[in-house]
Length: 232
Image (cartoon, rainbow, N blue to C red; front, side):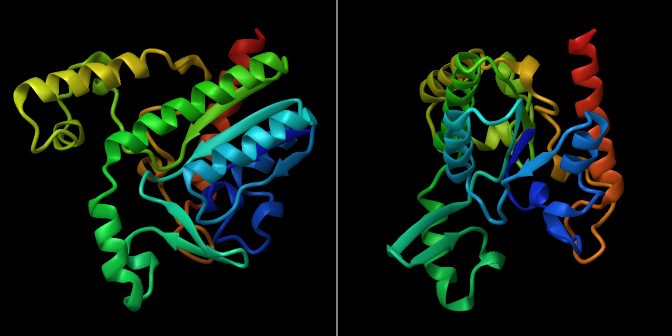
């Protein structure tokens, strides 16, 4: 049995049967590997939620392999009461009454620290999988980072925007810190580290604008090719 975690992309949002739909990449991969997909992805999940759910699954050690799809950096959840969760996403994701709060929150919630958190989550899950003698793979669902951050070139527009408002010395210090942390990641365990599913999307799901069957098929092919190369 293979574990799949992530947000609405992996959950199968936009498909009539969602997790059970035969066209989403989790089920395509599981069929090809002659096993069952335990799809625990949930729409709107933050990366913290994805990490926590995957870590708990690894503690149970009930799966042969794990696929963890990371979502957008700006997604977060807060809980006003035990029975109520409040989702913080983009302006379009929240109602008109909440947009001012969401806007202020996101202005105070810089991408840099969120990227560092995803790096930490990845390294922790990798170590947990190693300790459990399990395979784990990571999928870039909506991460905006770019490969030049790993090399230290930071030539992309996104990389340059990340350090706006800092002095030259501060830019160098934070660039070096991020590069040092990125170098600690085992990139061999990533399916599509620098091109997110959102960026590779070529079609839409039957019911909305989530990734369509062709996009899921492309991702599944990438996963299976990497696994085949490891096995051989």
